[in-house]
Length: 139
Image 1 (cartoon, rainbow, N blue to C red):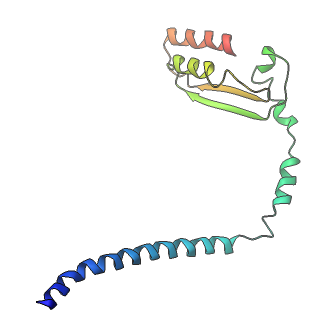
Image 2: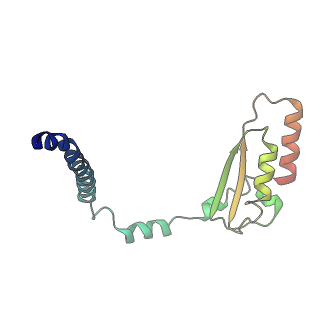
């Protein structure tokens, strides 16, 4: 009788052992993968100071010359641009664009620009007129 209880209890004893094995396997695989990644990084090619200097040498004035092409100069003085936000939108989503303008684009920073990009193929006349008036109003 004692042997049967022990045999019946074995599957319960093996489950914690099996769970521990799975957990240790996952942790071991994570550590092994992390070590392989760290060993594959070449510190000679990835110097943070060199990368920082390369970024600092990028000529930002080249991006500012695009402002005229986007028609931004007609709405105000030319400004130095740090970030350009491009938002994709369907032509019929006029209300959604207005909500975006009234919420998080209402606090536009001095060094950011935003543009809505719309696809305009095969538009009906009413929608085309709406988009043209939106373009005149908001740029």
